[in-house]
View 1: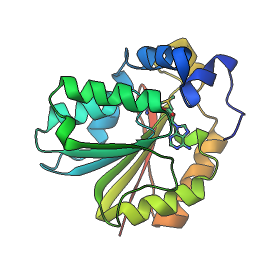
View 2: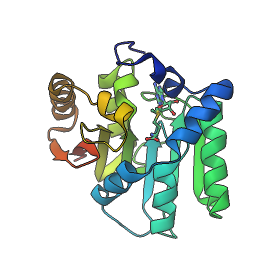
View 3: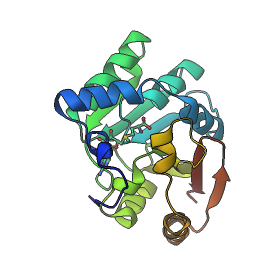
View 4: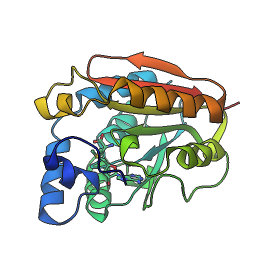
Length: 202
Ligand SMILES: C[S@@+](CC[C@H](N)C(=O)[O-])C[C@H]1O[C@@H](n2cnc3c(N)ncnc32)[C@H](O)[C@@H]1O
């Protein structure tokens, strides 16, 4: 995992563990403004399967199951603390049975080929050790016509710490190039609280 993200205070947010990790999950769970904007980029298709990589405390998963009572969600996160928090969040909404959440990392998704209509990664892709390998594995999991969405804090995010974490244009350039190489296409979305790139599987 790269260590070049600014801000030592970010550490408990990388792979949250122990009491500090639980606190980090609580902090992340207080603000879903960026996740709401990400949700708006995901075409609502009743009964779709959405896979989230690095779901953290489950903010986006919560919005997904609330938007569509038939959506199926699945995903991976390497943190047992985040797995427990996300599971609790979905259970509170009565959606645990529609969720297949597992411990795991980007690049080794434990799901079959053509499993998902969308794969989403919010505020996590800059932490992955091998973006290219992760994209290739993501493409495997996507159905034809399915989309991958990678989002990260924007310089206009609501909290100061989030704004300081906004990635430089060079990172977005590298990410767009990698997406184009694997998917053959890429689209950029500059929203208020988040910056995102999407790519569609052929
Ligand atoms: C800053 S949190 C963001 C969580 C959530 N996506 C959100 O927006 O609230 C980063 C998350 O990525 C997860 N993560 C870290 N390294 C990862 C990897 N290699 N593959 C998948 N997830 C990873 C962490 O465990 C953590 O839950």
